[in-house]
Length: 207
Image (cartoon, rainbow, N blue to C red; front, side):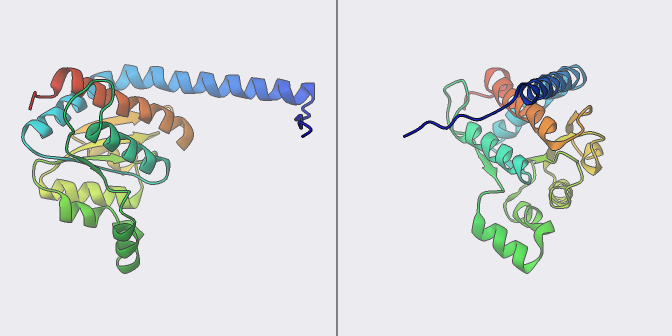
């Protein structure tokens, strides 16, 4: 087979390199500011997760699109493991059950796909991790509202102004400099990794 070579002229290559450098520097600046503003909140969130599990409760996680993937990523690292070997932990992403999602969406509307699951699965003392890059995703906001009614605790991951979720969380983690979902999610995955890792190392009871 003849190998096809992508034909890129010097101007295109230069523009692409400049754009890549700009986005890299933007992403790093967001993380620096996020750490400066919310480093203590990451520790508080990790402690809250540990206390939830210590009390025999569970962690529910929800979000849309890339935030749905982040929800599943976090659940996998809790039920499985991250960096340290330990027992499986009680965590569930509300984004994975296609029958639930499509039945609720069909019967009640997409806005209720997470809140109905919180009603059915959530208990007082559980923790909901609500992820929305805008902080205004209606189905996530409704899930957060339902969690508070039940007596669950709430960790919110947002971006920009933080939207409606910003004032709702027991622990709030907001990427304040973010101007789009991509950059927000790059900091969110750092936050998720930090929450799980810190919890494992410092706040997870040996149960």
